[in-house]
Amino acid sequence: MRCPFCKEDQDKVIDSRSSEGGRVIRRRRQCLACGRRFTTYEKIGESIKLTVIKKDGSRVPYDRERVLVGLQKACYKRPVSAQQIQDIADRVEEDVFRQCDREVSSQFIGEHVMRHLRRVDHVAYIRFASVYRQFADAGELIEEVTQAIREPAEEETEQPRLFELR
Image 1 (tube, rainbow, N blue to C red):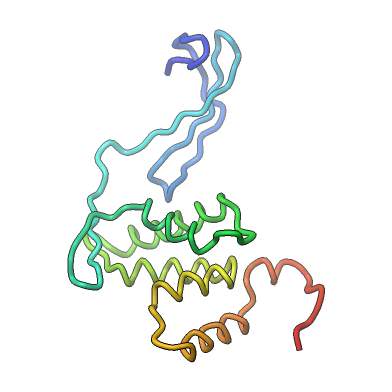
Image 2 (spheres, rainbow, N blue to C red; image 1 turned 180 degrees about the vertical axis):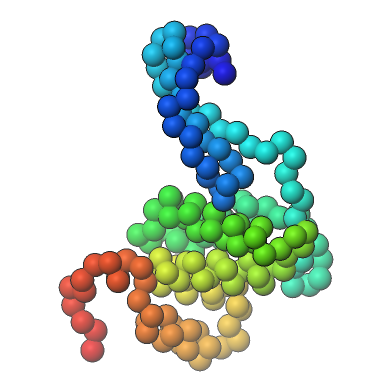
């Protein structure tokens, strides 16, 4: 691997980790010539083609970016970090590739996004659910909010509550 700084072809691998559900290997390298460190990513050359079956029956190629855009919209102005959004997308993708071979329904993806998002932030979860589930009336929305209030998010279980709602 050529060093991006001095262009020499002598380096050693300091650390290797898998990411994106094991489909990418992240390697931290150090150039033996100049001593600077850099990161490389190795992906499988032949990616698996996965088709998403939408609600209307049409089929489109799976696109991780669509999941990320939906998560970013739901988490807008919420205390959810970019890393948490990436982690949720990773977990959803792992679920999809573990349980589906060539085709997956958009419903399966949406339900898994909601399941993981609900653990992180209830407001972002409600935002995503309101668009995804297309609630027919306010009663359905209130029912979903009531259910979300009953189940604590991950952050709430890790930190003590400062005040109690009555």
